[in-house]
Length: 149
Image (cartoon, rainbow, N blue to C red; front, side, top):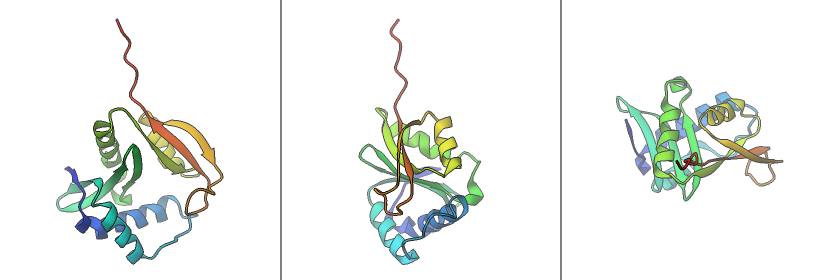
């Protein structure tokens, strides 16, 4: 089930955020304590966010800010079960004109995931513009243009 995220989801969201980053990107620096991450996500989840929940457990989450997919993370034990696809599809539904997002350049699994769902690579940076100071790449999704008949 996909539902809107709420601030009290923050502890589970932080678990997913930290676990998925540790597994998929062990080379990424950890910049914040769990308490700092929880405060951040408590505030962030008050905005536009979505969670996939199964039997009372959050399996993944997505955060949208304006036309930006600000975060999409899936618990490592729930990956390859359609959770990320469902969250990405929800972003497409609520942003039908399209949206953009950032991915760390060396996160090959995420890049493959997004490209398989129509994400288009725009450009890369050396990472000076992100908090982790780690090279990243910019993606966007736009709906396919309809052919007039």
